[in-house]
Image (tube, rainbow over all chains, first blue to last red; front, side):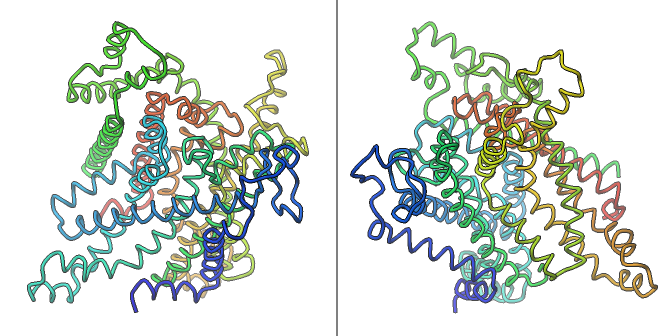
Length: 280
Length: 323
């Protein structure tokens, strides 16, 4: 079995991991099937009469100021938030793994230079880096946002991978591969990276939660996902002005964020205990 | 010790300069230069453009711009805010007191409560209380702070009318009011923003303390102490916790910058007049010199406070100095 499959199985054996994985799978399924199952959030027969309706059987989450069904909006928002999170994390994990392996395996000057760079980058909070970039670049499309979030999220991962590589590098199977004349590239991709999959998966699941919070925060400040594309953070921003009369506009997108981030963190916890049983 | 200290300080300075370089590169990676971006907002005459280019220093070659930037930071000159047309440092200084008040309260409560709860959890590892505390703190950790802030402002501030939910003080309360009344007023305004931040940050402290405590509790000297008949309270606090408090110093070092740069989201929601809401407004106005100022300040603080944490660690634990 692949190390990836083994890790998922290990996480699913744990109660917390199972709960998190179940919630995330259901959300993913709903997000993918949403257009077929739920009413189109934009199409409303009576745009004015149905605005800000409280939750009811017809609209389980109520309706927003523009008469759109909030449940449909939250589910559509899930598509955006999950897509941004998965893509950005994939990018930052890849960058972190590559930099970490380069630093740990090549050592010397490369190691010093890369780790100094990481130290410097970690000194500025990620939120400020992103705010700065988004303030300088105007009108950022979603894909660009993914690139920005992904490229500001790999610093910690690279340190983690480096430490793992330093540990594995001295093991006899690596020595044996080197003695057999294996090329550097083969050693890195065949021997080093597969053995660092555990910590990488822990970092990735934790990263999903972080990115969802970061994206929601940026969208809440009006700098992330731009309307009319629905995002959970953007929906809470819109809800601010009607908070007193129609609080459900803010409550449900927030619960969606809470559930998703909590699930990702639970899976991450379960994975970490499976990878490193000593820390429980 | 002296040599170790000097090396650690030089390292901190290098890290800060690298952070500044990254910020500089980040600004120059964007399409166009600052003046072109301003030009998009309103039409300007060629003379005006030339004057602005000179003022922002973008008419200079890039290497010189970089040197000017580093020199400015070294002298404490962070440039001029576009929105307010005032020196960035003056704006930062104005907003500092409110953020220190909020951040200081949060760190104080977070660490006292977090360490106490973390130790309790470690003592009762695996019990219902341990699991409940873990669940509650994880939920807090997964909450978007701006959302929790809005919900608390709506529920406690607007619906129940128990506490004020905007600003630092009641504007109707004049300077003539007695000092005690004014202090109480500020304290009432402080409750909701502080509570929000404590709820979302407590999990980290608790977890860290619980983990550090568990590490120590399995050591042989604890078994010896128990075998000698030392009471559980003394074993926990005098024997175990004394050794489990060192890692918390490092954590505190990571938290200290919050004292100054504050929380962007919570300050923005509660209109708390600190550096966090200043940064949020600057991002909205695309006032990047101001944002840059906040980022530089927080970078400097993070580097400085982790250096301080290392020093404190070395002072508390002789093993660090010897290795």
